[in-house]
Length: 115
Image 1: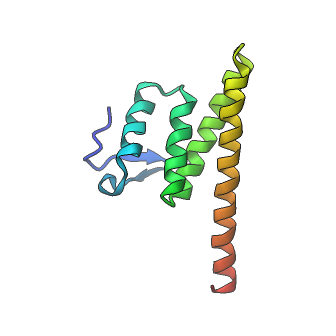
Image 2 (image 1 turned 120 degrees about the vertical axis):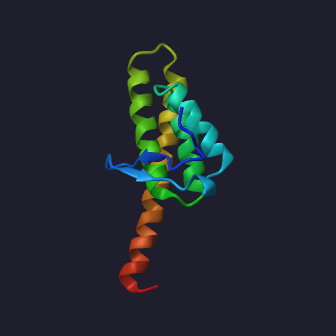
C-alpha cells in the first residue's frame, strides 16, 4: 500500500510517473487511491477518483483515471450479464473525458489569445 505521506507518485496518462504532493491532495483522493491499490480492476474507483481530480482542477490526473475507468468498464461490459450497470459507468467516464477536453480547450484558447 502506498504511504500517502511520503513522496509517492502516480502514473499520468502518458505512462510517465509523476510526483504527487500528497499534502495538497484531498482525503477522498487518498482513500480512492487505497481502494485502487486494493482492487485495481474495479472501474468505479478510477471513475470516482477522476471526478474528484476534475473537481479540484487536476485535469491531467482526471483524464488518466477516466481513461482507465472507461477501459475497465468496456471490458466488464463485454463479459457481464449486468451490462446496464457497466454501461452507466462507461457513460459517466465518457462525460468526464468530454469535460476534461473542454477544460483543456479553454486553457489552450487562453494561451493562444493571451487571455
